[in-house]
Image 1: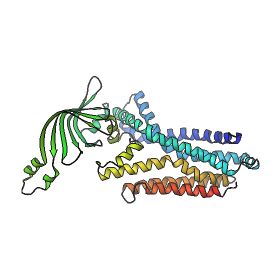
Image 2: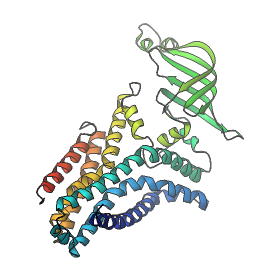
Image 3: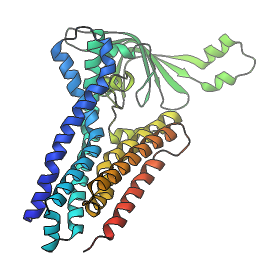
Image 4: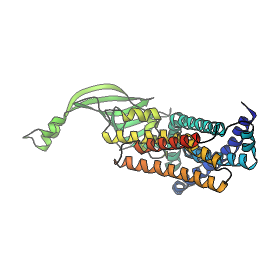
Length: 372
């Protein structure tokens, strides 16, 4: 690595780290502010744990704008000190400067993808549990009571719960509709627990659901109900492999995590899950495409703004206006694409990926016009 390359890394990393730290803290506090009205004398340690768990969510949103600002700062410094001109005079082409800075954006995007895949799913569980314990002074699982929770292989519902002295959460008055085929199977049990991703029903009774009975002719409503739900018999202990732990479902359904708690691979699997309804699959695909493209924002923005910053570096105001305008257009396109996809007006991911491709092509075209 040449001395000039090292200088590029240093001039980029210092403002980048500073911007990431500042913007992440600001966004975290501004995002948490509306929720503070629901808290009364929270324990300082638990409150700090909740705020800290929010940081990775806002970190992903901060990375692109911090990257753009770092490039503006670093390129502006190189131009003002004459280092960029000196580098060109020494035979270092502008294209090399562009590629080095774009590589930094690619590394930032790779880090964002890793956060989306591994960090945010774990943090979402911590955030939800910490929030509801602060808010209600009881285990967060209470948010799932009397709710239909789709666990990937069926729909779970329970009306009460208890926490044993050993810390195990026991669900009570449980109904589980297993989406294994037709006729559907329904299980009722007094108690149920989760062991990892395995749902365990105790003293369960199985019922067969026959959807064809709904359209049966010459039956009264009560006869049609009896024909629809037929007791098969007790099965005792029954186990089912689900797509997540109990904490995962708390994070997904309690709206306490500020972000979808599923990883990229889980969203991909949910989008392809034939047992889920069409609405759930479409929602999973929208979130999947948004998360992936948002993670690639640093690469896309640098591929476009770096060549422009180098070209117009001598006119600082022009460079800042152009690059910030491109960044604003990016965020508006991603937000608009998400809204249109969620409304069903465009296919999931269409506008997200189209915006990414346009940004990369624009950056390639501008970079190609730089001197060798």
